[in-house]
Image 1 (tube, helix red, strand yellow):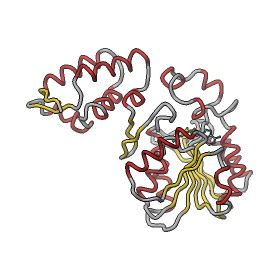
Image 2: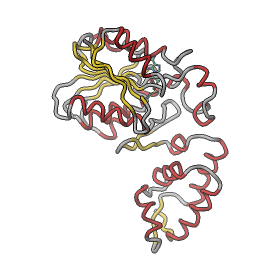
Image 3: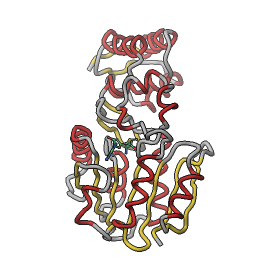
Image 4: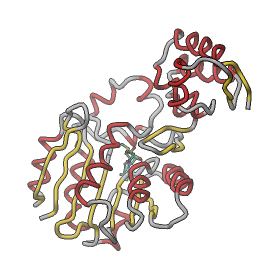
Length: 289
Ligand SMILES: C[S@@+](CC[C@H](N)C(=O)[O-])C[C@H]1O[C@@H](n2cnc3c(N)ncnc32)[C@H](O)[C@@H]1O
């Protein structure tokens, strides 16, 4: 630990932020690498007297910030971590950086099932860093989850993240194409969740550099109209869900209406578009019969 006066740190922070970048990314750097939590950072300006303790020196932190600004590499990949809900998750370039808007999936699920329901079996298709499944099994230790991904490297990251937070074995991991790993769970799932790749091809080509050049294409691209994977997931879901089982999907801002129709066509009921905190119809949910 390196001791530095708070005033010196605040002066240095101001200088770094004038070079560019956003405050949130800077907070991630100082928290993950420097060891000063966001809440502690916020308190610095209120009480700038005395010293603070950093895990790495300012020169090292500054070099990461410079790299982030020059190369557009997301700060989370440079630090190797991101914050999501109350979790600090490892991320590598094999996984999508879990987004704040996805955090709401957990609230949607807990609203439907309540925390106390027992022996619930859920599937997450395309788990990436494991964020959704890990948050669910931590909130509901009696639930059993199966988290899958097409990418074995992503699953390794998800498994590491799970083991950081839990000694239980209520979350299993399996590699394969969408429903493929669920052969033995046919008709047994109470709930299936997916935040699949849903970006339409044209939109993908125009994504900001920091997304397109660094985040896995396989995690983003949803075919010509963005609905390629969502269609497949919905069409096969009735084979794997229990009667009255729920399917919860995240989608692009303008896909809710179309997904609603696909769900209805495939015998789903209670179909609803759920808005995120910005008022965007970010999730489409339904119940199999
Ligand atoms: C949008 S990311 C979501 C990751 C994570 N669930 C989240 O919300 O941050 C989509 C994930 O689906 C995975 N994926 C893509 N194609 C797949 C397929 N055919 N079968 C299973 N998983 C797939 C990707 O590897 C990626 O991890």
